Amino acid sequence: MKDMMGHKGYYGSVHYSDEDQVFFGKLEFVRSLVNYEGTDVDSLRKAFEEAVEDYLELCRDENKEPEQPFKGSFNVRTGSDLHRRAALYAKEHGINLNNVVTEALEEYLSL
Image (cartoon, rainbow, N blue to C red):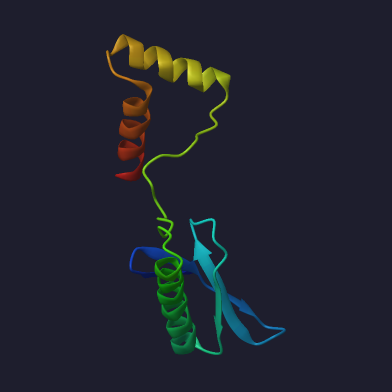
């Protein structure tokens, strides 16, 4: 994974500011804004992991369910022609549109 770190199922970006001479990032794939920074790779990783832990602790303290990065559903904007073609394909093959999209993604990502 390029320019990303992972910890406990959460992913964080990795960036560098030459002007500030600092590494920084934020949790990705969640709505909550959680930032971190460090002066080198080790301190950035430590700050990222601490940010995840702090986020999870805050959720526990507030009796909130932490956001999960990948819920298993998302909106896809395909344009009307591709939408029509996929819906007709699904109908012709006796499956639903979700199955068409899932199978297409599986095929595409297995390359």
